[in-house]
Length: 119
Image 1 (cartoon, rainbow, N blue to C red):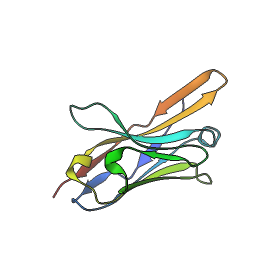
Image 2 (cartoon, rainbow, N blue to C red):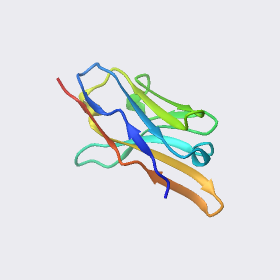
Image 3 (tube, one colour):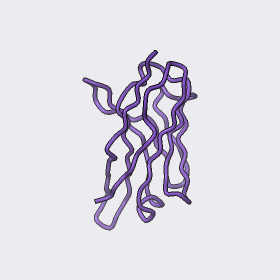
Image 4 (cartoon, rainbow, N blue to C red):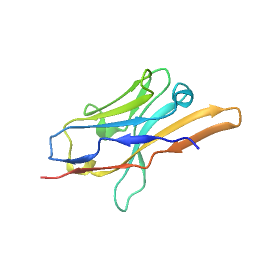
């Protein structure tokens, strides 16, 4: 079982910033596309942003220009820098890793971290 360790959630006022972090095993990290997803109460889990092992990024439209995903290969970690936060960004945020193994595609999830944007 691949473990993803997340941190960085919390309560922030609208317009504020937060940074989420997620670390995993090096052997997995270096071959993985890493991603952040979120799930608000009563809604389906949705993609926020992904970054490939080569550094190519992809963002959900509503976070473009506000959120930045990055990875630090020396620390086996992926980050989500969230700026200009809005109340609609409130959700549980999950780290995701996806990679191709000898047994096919594999995908694992972190335990999630709560982000609440409220005044």
